[in-house]
Length: 165
Ligand code: PNS
Figure (tube, protein in one colour):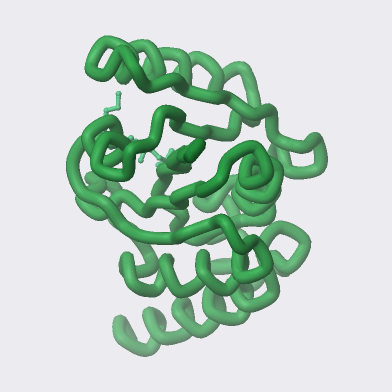
């Protein structure tokens, strides 16, 4: 079995993530899309919410399995018997960071390769962080995220406003 993992924060999934997942999926028998649980970032969506959104967005991809993980990505890959870590690259800035991670992961787990997939040009400027910022100020985000994510994003941000007065 050719198995890969595609790790990330996915807070929330964007069409850029989905494009990478859909392009990587046919290269493997199984692709685990994995939400990192113990991130130092303060997420907007809980791990469960992010997983629900990922599962909805990837429901049409039968070989994709969405789950969460804790700890090192190479250890998670070993638990799933995956030999490949898939990551999307939007820019030279991403590339530097991804190569740094790939080289450290290679030293931690020499059998695991990192596969960097260039983001489609129409999603090269899309990030979860900026999508959340646009939505927080009432802007339209439907061109960058799956429809269900947009709805959930506005609902979440309305809930937050209510919570803080
Ligand atoms: O979507 P993100 O936030 O860019 O994803 C970053 C992620 C989750 C891929 C990275 O932080 C990660 O792999 N974290 C797990 C801990 C780990 O293995 N760190 C060492 C990488 S060299």
